Length: 298
Image (cartoon, rainbow, N blue to C red; front, side, top):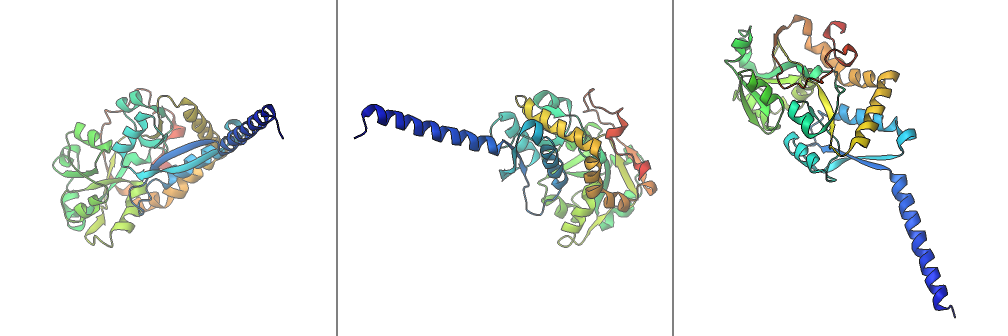
């Protein structure tokens, strides 16, 4: 019969064997990257950002090892996922958002505009019968006479309010019905958002329309943000995006998701109202032309 000493050695060997393969399995899975899940199945606004994230992680496997990319278990609006990120728990460890002085104090920003700043060029969803009213808007003072719709927790709310504009907020999905019903005068959207949203929501909101003549512009970089204690993940994704910028894949994703909308927007024939963004940190790379969308080149 095996001796007690032999049994102890065998048991210890089995424990070490299990520990080894458990650690090997954990290594093969790599870092787990969790981004905010959409609130609804029909929401496709962030598909480009998810593709950028996945491509950047793939580009850095050689240096940083394998990864697992997944949405959070629960759908989250911006206000909630920023709270979750600050907690530093496992619900999310990378999010996307417009930047501000406060956000860059609370989180680690990756200062590469994810959509080359195109979100700062806004065309509006409106009720069809609002077109004549908006055609009278020539200046910022004219715009101040109207009501603007925005989502709860969106960074744009503070920007509009800081410029003296009246903002009405609601949950994202409610905003289309509210626009259709004239609860506010216009719902400014990024060029890349407006046409997709119109296609998705106009069937159930037949009075919904894309405004024809106005372009609102403000500098609006949209970044990946990370918990203050997660610099390693931030550095990895930045390294990946820098590679993408060199090999052309970053621009390719931009054109894939935005090219058709830029053409439809007909920017050259819209009158522009510029709005100050008083929320921008001084570190914003506004002078690096390679990072920003230039409508003159399209």
